[in-house]
Every structure is written in C-alpha cells, then in structure tokens.
Amino acid sequence: MIDRRGFLTIAAATVAAGGLAACAKDNPAKNTGSKGGGKQITLGFSQVGSESGWRAANTQSVKEAAAAAGINLKFSDAQQKQENQISAIRSYIAQKVDVISFSPVVVTGWDTVLKEAKAAGIPVILTDRSVDTSDPSLYVTLVGSDFEVEGERAAHLLEKVLAGHTGPVKIAQLEGTTGAAPAIERAKGFAKVMHASHPDWKIVASQSGDFTRAGGKQVMAAFLQAHSDINVLFAHNDDMAIGAIQSIQAAGKTPGTDIKIVSIDGVHDGFVAMSKGQINAIAECNPLLGPQLMDAVKTVHAGKGSTLPRWIKTKESDYTADQAAAALPNRKY
Ligand code: GZL
Image 1 (cartoon, rainbow, N blue to C red):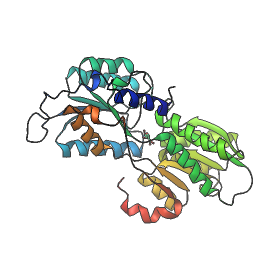
Image 2: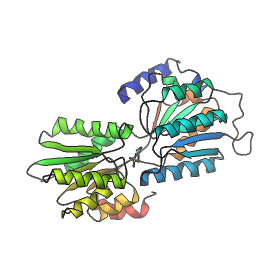
Image 3: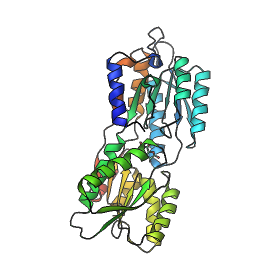
Image 4: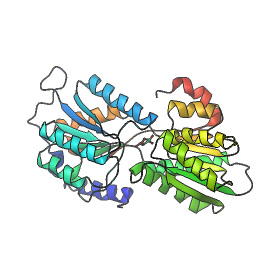
C-alpha cells in the first residue's frame, strides 16, 4: 500500500507543480450561486454505511451542513459495501451532479470509477477516509483525520493508563473494517509507538470487529476464550469497545480495571463508558466534517479547487476517564 504520508507528499508536489489535472476541472463558467444568486450546487454523496455512532454523527453533520449551505444533497448509504458505493458514484455521474464526495469504505479499487468521474468533468472530494491511487488527479482533496497519528495518540494514552503498572502487558486489538484506511493506519501508528518505546508490550490477539458493537462483542469473547492473560484492549473505535465490554463482563472480569481499555472516536456512549470507568481513555476522531466539506464543495464549484490543500485535516483531542463526566454535557456528538 502506498504510504499515506508519502503519497500525500508526492501529490502535494504534483499540485505545486501545477500538475493537477482535469478531475478538479476548474469550471469558472458554471454559476457558483447556491442560495439566491444563481444555479444551486448539487452534491452527490456516498456514505460508508451506518455501522457506528461515529458514522451517525458524520451523516448528520453532512446533511445539516448541506442544508445550511443551500447545497442540494443526493445522499446514499452503502451499507459498508464497496460495490454499492461504486454504483452510487456511477448514478451521480449519470445525473450530472456538480460535485461528488464519498467516504471510501476501503482504500483500494477506486481508480476505474474515479476515472469515469474525471472523464465526465465532475470533481471528487474524499471525506473521512482516503484511497490508494497512483493518480493524484482523481480527487481534489481529502477532508478528514490523520488516522496514523490517532493510533500513536492511543498508544500514548495507554502509557498514561498504565502508569505504575508492573508485570506483563498483553494487548488485544480490535481492528476496524479490513482494508479501511482507519484500520490500517491506526494499527500502524499504535505499533510504531509500541515498537519504539515498549518492548514489554505484546499484542497477543488482533482481529477485525468491523467497527460495530456486535463485532467487538463477538471477537472479544473469542479473544478471552483463547487468552486468559489479556490485560489491555486497544479498540479502533468506541462501538467495538462497548461491545467488548459486554464480553469482558460476561467473562467475570471488570472492564477498565482487570482489562484496561483505550479506544478511538469519542462518541457519546464512549464518554458514558469512560465516566463509568469502563473505558480508560479515548483518542477523539472528529465526525463533524460537514461544514469543511461544504466549504470545499463551494470552492471547487467556483473553479478554485486547485487552491485547496491536498488534505484538510480535522482538529481533535484526547481524553482520560477522569475528564469524561465534565466533558459529557458539552459533547456535540
Ligand atoms: C474514522 C471513521 C471510522 C470511525 C468508526 O474516520 O472512518 O469509521 O472510527 C467508523 O467509528 O465506523
């Protein structure tokens, strides 16, 4: 897989050299009005699915921001199937929407359909997750988080959670959807810190729970059957951690105490679990990408896509259980 950072560096160089080609075809002729002044922008959006609390918040943010921006949103839920996203993108091309945006369920397999969008002169903006492609012209920008850094942050949070801990550290890892950018990169970031600074940490079990509660519960139950010595869980999202908590309790163990839990996302139920001491720390992943996406859509539609950075990163924080109760009332999702 092309290293995301490396790829983005190449891409940025390409853009800087003015090499960005037609997909972001700057089309100043088109009227950029959305509200009041001229033709309304139509955005075709393909969402991964509705697998987690994070996804629900992300969908709400996209829909609310489109309405606020006066953008006509065509929205589809792919139920976590790449073929459904490809069909949706083809449908948007056939409908001649002004801009296409999607959160790619996995990183590979997009070049063909993105080349069709480019041939149709429809610019594409990625949200949330990235794709692996050797052709940087196939999308204008990515609005989303740095998942590798999120994995590093989760490892640093685990350092805090394990302060004063003596004895072995036996980690179970609940991975996100196989082949998805957040799953690949969170695992990479976590492993980077672990190998650099913690030779005593050992990942004894690692498997995908597909970012769902049911998946987390099922896989954690199997982990506990096979490894009675697990004392840490690193979950790639809160929903899998919440599912795992049920299996930990069913095994007669106390989540957050017998098995320390570090997760990523920061959804409401994750904060509730933290306030109960069941999750020890969460690296936030901000789902509220709607406003930044709509700004990028308007910029691209106004023919200024080449002025956008290759990656519009979201801001996010880290939280430990002692902060959860105070933070809960102010959480936006
Ligand atoms: C991350 C996003 C992930 C979340 C999960 O940006 O793609 O997918 O971490 C969601 O909760 O299912």
